[in-house]
Length: 448
Ligand SMILES: Cc1ncc(COP(=O)(O)O)c(C=O)c1O
Figure 1 (cartoon, rainbow, N blue to C red):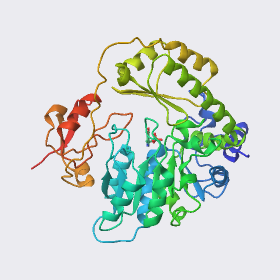
Figure 2 (cartoon, protein in one colour):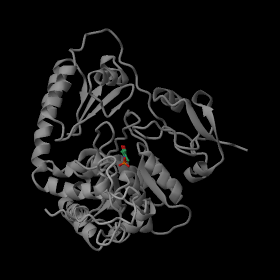
Figure 3 (cartoon, rainbow, N blue to C red):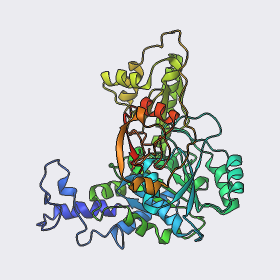
Figure 4 (cartoon, rainbow, N blue to C red):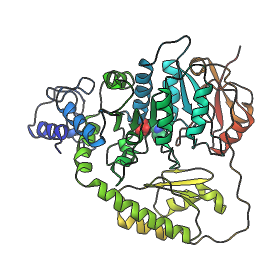
């Protein structure tokens, strides 16, 4: 597969052109990557109006993902989430009042920011079963009931899959219900770009999503910020006509050409046997999971390239497990009280797998009671997300926030999932979760 952006920049660099254009480093090497870092010079195309090399490269990605259209972004899924929600909103029938989007409660804060900027109303879906902050499993039956009960249909359903703990939604089932009601399905697939390249694709586009965003940088060999906004072949509306403008609305006018080259090169990498490499990697992860289970660790392994250790089940916090690994030169993706998340890709070397396995001693049997997880419960939405986000605010200690209205979404990052949504009245359960996630201060609305 050709790599037009990468080739162009390499050629540009080779020619030794005097750079009387941005960026200010002029190609001098400080970090080492500057000679390859250019801007939209003659021939380099324009990310938001592509006619040349970027267009060609995006067409390659479109083909690889089997999409109707795949757009590049250099501002991560955060940028794509805003663009995706905005694009869906443009296609909704205009009724009275604010447009309403139905969303699973474990949404990333970028979704909240988009809703504030676009002045949307969100109807949240809470899980029917017990779930932690990061998860929000929804069954097709539950969705069917919710949609039937709504006076006016939402302009889209927004879900996150995979979630931070590797939970995977029943996208096929959920999509069937969405199609029945004519509601577009938008998936935050930030963690799942690679799912397309499994022996049997589990990518949202192949399971019935209308649009989805992938952080290429999270699971493919792409520089930070590289992401895709995909429009499905059988999307319910011509979203592709608005994708570029929507991405421009949420992005910088100076996209990183390093990241664009990386996305471009990634097309060739995945076209040349990356699927097989992913399959080999998943086998190694499965073996590691088996060995760790034999040592007494409790694991959650739903998403092929993620291992989630359930520290709470063996009486060790996720933080302690992370610290333990850190001392052995291994840095995990994420830890909270209950979990430790390890992310792998084909770039994880065999020697690293050995190091990880050797790091874990057998679990010593202890007598304790597994700690109960604190669950999120629904709270009163006292004002709109936008009103709260733009309101005058003050900062209070988390313990003193009971009954106050949340201004900025209170999150720890990662997982960047708001415990309290802007405009929600803060409950005792939320305060318990703030403290669990180490959030000591909260921005609340200054009430008159
Ligand atoms: C579920 C989820 N969605 C969206 C994002 C934002 O992605 P990005 O970092 O590519 O902007 C993240 C980041 O961690 C995430 O975990």
